[in-house]
Length: 145
Image 1 (cartoon, rainbow, N blue to C red):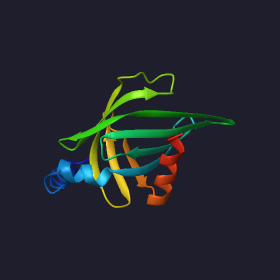
Image 2 (image 1 turned 90 degrees about the vertical axis):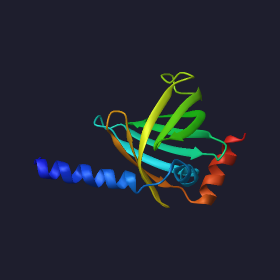
Image 3 (image 1 turned 90 degrees about the horizontal axis):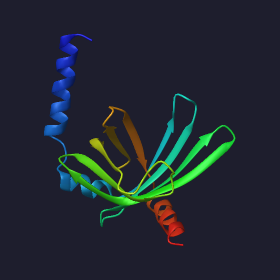
């Protein structure tokens, strides 16, 4: 990549952040449910639905599809946004490799009415799509048990 392209990308990124949302606006925009669909290099499919509540709690309902085998798990915890970064703390997980107290951060790149783009600490960019309100209410009520 040429120096000119790198500088252009850097300036563009800086403009996005400078003209971007405040943490309060990100907080308001992220509340609701979002879906992700990832296919790993190994062929494993990950389907996740994140639900962010206005009280700072979240629920992740996930499926891992590996050939004919499907494994489901849930993560529950708290979330905050500080300096454009989404912080998760897992309080309870049914996933065997995610302990209580596990923390994760994702830099928010952009949130619109229909999609959220974030980047994790390893540089992986993820796009999540907003779930319509009626579907989100159904997902929440199914976890109330």
